[in-house]
Structure formats: C-alpha cells, structure tokens
Amino acid sequence: MRAIEIRVDDLMQSGYMYLLTEPEGKNFHVGFLPELSPKELLVLGVFGGKYMTDCGSEFPDDWFEKAKLCHEEHRPELNYFLTNASQPLSVWRRKGWIYEEDPRGWFQWYCRYWRGRRCPDDERQIKRWKAMARHVAQVRGGCAPGDLSCRRRQRQALLHWAYDSRRL
Image (cartoon, helix red, strand yellow):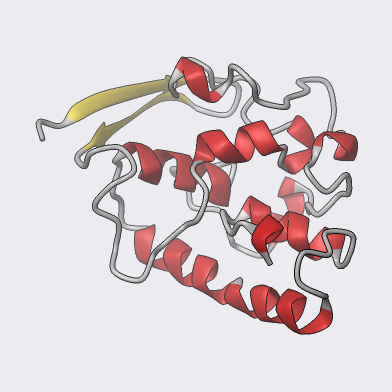
C-alpha cells in the first residue's frame, strides 16, 4: 500500500499531519482484536455523542451518516446503554493518558489506527485496550447471558473500547 497523507484541521488540532500506511481495518498488532469498528461505535452511540463532532473532514463520510452525535453537549441518552460511562477529558489529561498527537484520547487514536496510521503510541494504547478485558470478565461473571440491563455503565464503557458488550 502506498502511504496516504492526512492533514488535520479541527477544533483541537491544526496543521497536524499523519500517514496511513496500512489498509483500513487490517494488519493490526498481534493480540489486538477490537470487535467493533469506529463507524459501528458511532452508530451505536458512544461518549454521549460529543466525540469528534468537528472531525468530519478527517474521517470517511459514511462514519457519520447514522452516527449519534451532539455538538453542543454530552448527552448520555445518545449512548447505546443510555448511561454516562465517560470521564471528562481533564481527568484523562491529569492521569497522563493523552498522547500528544491524539488530544482527544483513546477513541481518536483508535479511529486513526483503524484507518491505517501506525505511531509510537500504539503499544501503550493496545495495552490499555487489553486491560479492559477484566471488565468483560466482570460482566460475564455478574450478569445472566444477554441481560443488557445488568451493569449498563460497565457495558457502555466496554463499547467505548470496541468490545461488543451487547454479546455478553
């Protein structure tokens, strides 16, 4: 694949450029097996709809066609499990979870990774994704199979990390 240059100009980044060096949705690191694509997550409803409302020019148009978004405010009722499972970006910054090139955090990294960008932060983010597996075990251990009303906040958080918690 020939590298494709992406230029970013949105409310949080201006003049940032990165390369897509892998085919979209392919050639992931060993052990990184997200169950949902960024498009699927946006359609299901994640992050109260507030995430990436100004990023349409960076990502494919079809990602946003049926996305549940709200530019004005975080609205938990837009989330698949109708609950807030997010922490403010200020918390993520304070804890050092934000990589300089992805100022919006994990999901921005994941969207860019899915598209084909590879960067120095990949291993750290994949390690963080793998750590969410403990929540999968907690939902499986604490809920009857298919009971989507059980541990809704935890299930919503798992969706944020591309685990399909609807199937637990």
